[in-house]
Image (cartoon, rainbow, N blue to C red; front, side, top):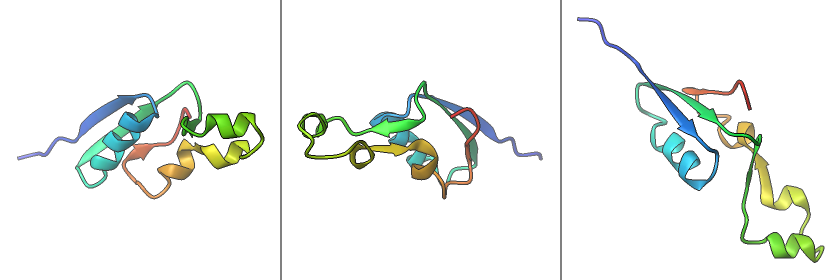
Length: 78
């Protein structure tokens, strides 16, 4: 009996999208994460960015970097 691998499409690289991708890390599925931006922005400290308390790399991380160790995520199209 052949086993079929499912393909999961996750739309958005926000908190919910990243948690869904991480939750499926050990599942036998292929994951495609689609987002307009190529980074995840942690929004609560945006006011500190506006007042020069933080720099942009402190609150934004590339999606490729966040999911770099997860082998079942397609990294193309970010």
